[in-house]
Image (cartoon, rainbow, N blue to C red):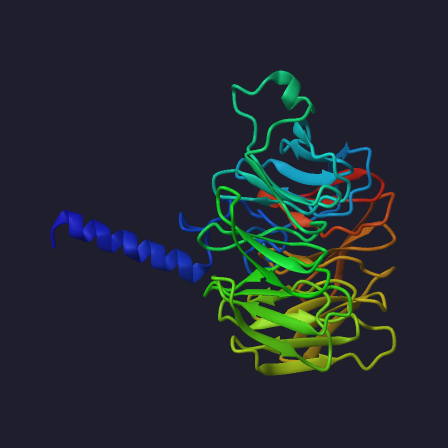
Length: 391
């Protein structure tokens, strides 16, 4: 075998190994970082490729001067991006401010960082999706300091965009709005298609390995929509429960979703039920979207002050907390879960369901925590501070 051919074979084998291991490759549309979007992956599994904080030590805080109700994300250089008030913040990994973007819209969504570093964020009041390029060496210093900067593009939607932004393998941006539409936008901000869900959408669309997009309404939504990459309907699932939050998609294409009415369901790629779990206890219903572990264990924050692990429709364990959890769990590479609560505390839970540690903020936590480089856990609080905890 000649050198060129052997080199091609080697490169192909490396690519296959990377894909098998779930590692990011040059084909991934997301930034090469531990947490580039809500739910970490295109399928919203919520699992980081690195371990999270092992201690509750607060490394630093940043005062945004507005309540932080969404999740941060991590850029390819370790920068931390998040929305608060009428602006979008970018911090260096050590907590120093890097730049800001004035969106003029309160209620911005959790952003997404693309492979080229472009940041995509939805705006509520102005009903737009923005594509923002981080400042370059040619950007005026005043703009970096917080004045308005020109976006790469912006797209006007029919309603407020508060759902986290999603992305497909080909770089298509998926954004959902409160008027019940799912939009597909190309890299230049042009509309490819829009799909009518029928109700407000507040959850992040999930994208399966085959490109199928899954989305449901957030107000008593009974239907989970499966949409083909060309915008045509694939199937709809209407079950006994509802689908109120973002769903997650496994590597095998199975879909997992939970309902505020007390159900967790698993469906195959054709929309057929694999299993369903109903909480028999009173006031034990899910309060946020679930997270999906590599072994298909589902982790759910519940209204009875607990986090539960569910496998094949059965509860493996439950961990009681000092208050009602309020966020989707974030899962580290070692299986430790991180979840925020209404009492302002961030809890770390060991893979066996035992409480590992807790860390207090001075306001309720409503945006899910994320895991950054070297295991730092970032979480925003309604006290207006972004916290960097650990590692």
